[in-house]
Image 1 (tube, rainbow over the protein chains, first blue to last red):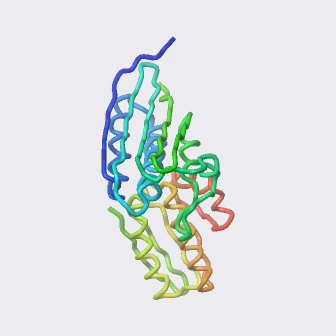
Image 2: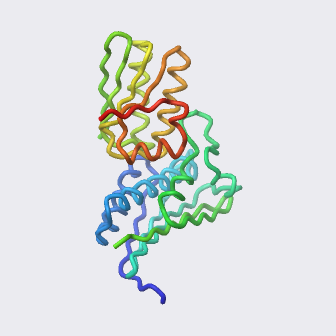
Image 3: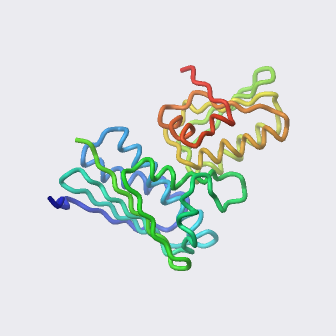
Length: 144
Length: 105
């Protein structure tokens, strides 16, 4: 049976690092309407933080652009969160998703962003085109 | 808001971090921890994470960067008392195999 959409939110923010915490709390406040466990809410907060940080650090590296966030929840407890940018894109998504892989040379980034998003949600889909941007869609089922 | 408290006893410098560690706050923490480590040059540095209420992969980078710095000056780094959520991320990355993690609280 197809699940029924109950509610959705959209948020567009500039890729300023100060917005990383705002984005994760905005999405977790929205998902909070489902009365999730502290653990599930923490997982969503962490996964959103990773995706938004990727937009700030990688997609819009030396520039500032818009981050488009959309979250939806359904009557079966399914939550779908989409985080999109129109930044530089990822040439090799498969490589970028490997744990510990990073293009950062400062030694201050662990290359664990996608691995954490994957582990903290039930499903992760990443689509990207070099020069056009990246779309990250995460699905998590909230236990009732 | 994030804050770092430093306490030195003999040759051990304890840096207690309070607040949320993400890419934004990591810059400020990095500045303060490195200033303390480089000015005191202790034999051991303990990074107390018991007051950290949120940490994403930027925290892993923060620990790795401090590990590199302490190694450079011949000092040893230990991570102390992370909450379950923070420990989960450290263990997932296998960072505890490089930087010892102690949980006493």
